[in-house]
Amino acid sequence: MKNDVEVNINLDPQGHHLLLLEEVNHMSCDFLTAIGFDGSQLRGAAPRTGRKRYQLTVRQSNERVDAIKDATTTGQMFYVTQGQHLNSNELFEARAKGKREKEIKALEATKETALKFSKEAEAARAIIEKKGQLTEENANSFLAPELAVLATWKLGKPAKGKKEDLSKMIWATRHHKRHW
Image (cartoon, rainbow, N blue to C red; front, side):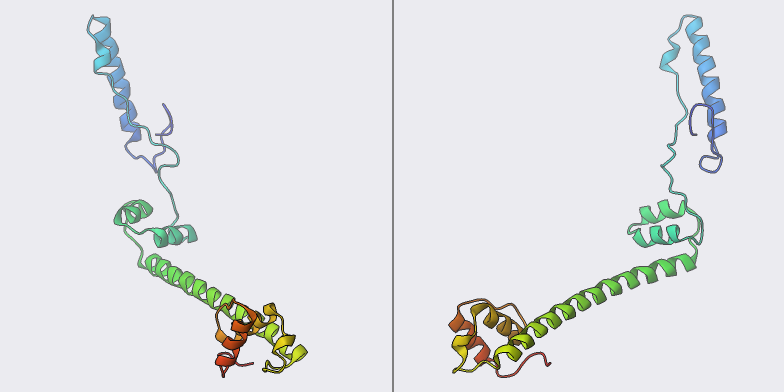
């Protein structure tokens, strides 16, 4: 029931009957009060349902598939389907959609990592083109941030430290983990 006199038959098929019972109850309680009894003790009201209580979704709609995908418990699934039979197509679509979303997240993480490695490689190439390969003879010409970029590129993980430590890390790794 939406308010005191309006009933939505789709949401509450018993609503009209409940309103009639409530009206009869009020008349009977008023009669008891009129003849000297406390009729308010027996007064009852039909239960009211809010407009947003039920999530109505149309069968074969994206909203219903999303709601089924997000349902993790039996109660949530009952709430989504409103106790009706579940269409197997909707269930398969919901599971496939969830699987695709997980794969998309994994691919985006892989893409982000690849872009990060690409930027590191470009920065290292620029330093090598500008100053040449790091050797013991030209080690003094490299600045600490440049050595940190080269060490990060060679090790494949962030490298920090003093200039001498970074040079030793670079010389200790003979082969690049990532190729040009």
